Amino acid sequence: MSTPSEANARLADDDRPTLLLVDDDDVFRRVLARALDRRGYAVTVAASVDSAIAKVREQSPEYAVVDLKMPGDSGLVLIEKLLELDANTRIVMLTGYASIATAVEAIKLGAIHYLAKPCDADQLVAALNKSSIGDSATPVAASPLSVDRLEWEHIQRVLAEHQGNVSATARALKMHRRTLQRKLGKRPVRA
Picture 1 (cartoon, helix red, strand yellow):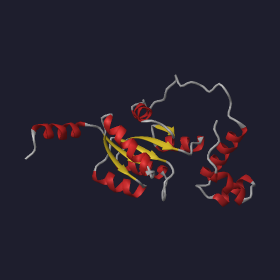
Picture 2: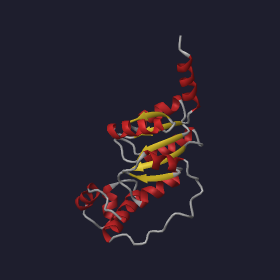
Picture 3: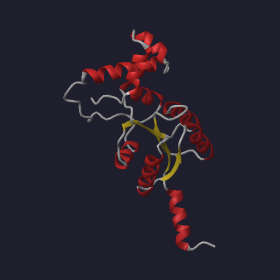
Picture 4: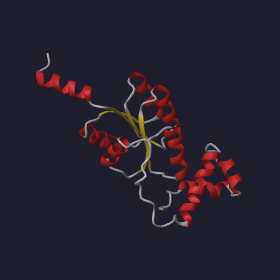
C-alpha cells in the first residue's frame, strides 16, 4: 500500500506534460533528461529512432526533443514518424551539426524549432513553448556568414537534395568524392 505522499507524487507525475528525448549520447541524454524532469516534464528517453518509435507506440508524447545525427536513421525520419502517430506532438530538432539545409528540412517536416548544441534545458523549454507561427522579433545577424560557412551550407543543401548520397553530391558539386568526404567529416564552421 502506498502512502498519501507517494500517491500524490504519482498523480503529479500523471499531470506533467510528457516529453520524449532522443539522443545517442548517453551522458548528454541523462543530464538533459534530469534537467527537463526538474522543470516539470515526465521524460522518456531513447537512444535511436527505432527505440523511440517503440516507446511512442506505447504512449504518444506531447513534446519531443530529437537529435539529428544518430546511428541508423536520422532524426529527420523520426520527425515524420512522430507526426504520423500524433500530429499534435511539438518537436524540437537538436544537433551538433547545424546547417541551414537541415534546419529548413526539419521545419518543413514539422519540427517547431531547431537548436544547435550545446544548448541548455532552459533554451529547450523556451523552444518547446515557442509559438509555431514564427517570431518577427528575431534579431537579424549583423554580419554575413564567412566564406567557409557559406561553403558548408552549400554542401549541406546539395547533400540534402541528393538524399545523403555522397557520390551523387560530389558529382553535382564537381568535386572528388574523397575531398567531399573529408569536408563532411569536419565539424561545421562557425558562422
